Length: 252
Image (cartoon, rainbow, N blue to C red; front, side, top):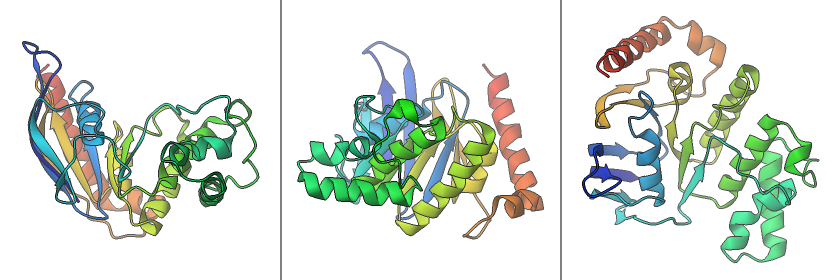
């Protein structure tokens, strides 16, 4: 599905190397998380894949074709909700379809379907100021899903939420990713979140940003949070990732 080949990034011609020869493959239907210290380039890499930033060197391929610009096949969900405050929930969800030129009746029908999928039926006419943070993030997720992307790029989408809402949305995301056959590249600072959601975890180091190691996650789907967290393999994998990140942090 996604192939990242020797991607480098500098923000200026003589500036420091931010990303150093990133090579990575993501299979169709796979959920891959990027973990690493702050400043290691996780979000920068995600934006390059999304086509929001140019790479200094290297290539990004989506389904075998070079992909350097935003496209309908890719959707990005940010940490902050980025909803348009003057639009209702249904019109926020329909926004991407409107940009694509989809007829009004069709885009509203699609938006309503995805609001229902995210358990937001009945909130179609609410404005962002009238709903909770968790609901705002679900509207943002519905907006991304409504364009029916092949690849979902998610930049710490639950980082600003309280613990209970975060766990609820983790379960929702896992359910939706499976039901929609999504391929997901997910940035997070939470080791627990990465293990619970992912098929594979890619750990990055910094100065410059680079891939250190990849860990396969040994749990079958569907998953239940309490069962996964009680499994000794969860603690073992968490400790391995923690030790590696602490070693990388100590080098700064």
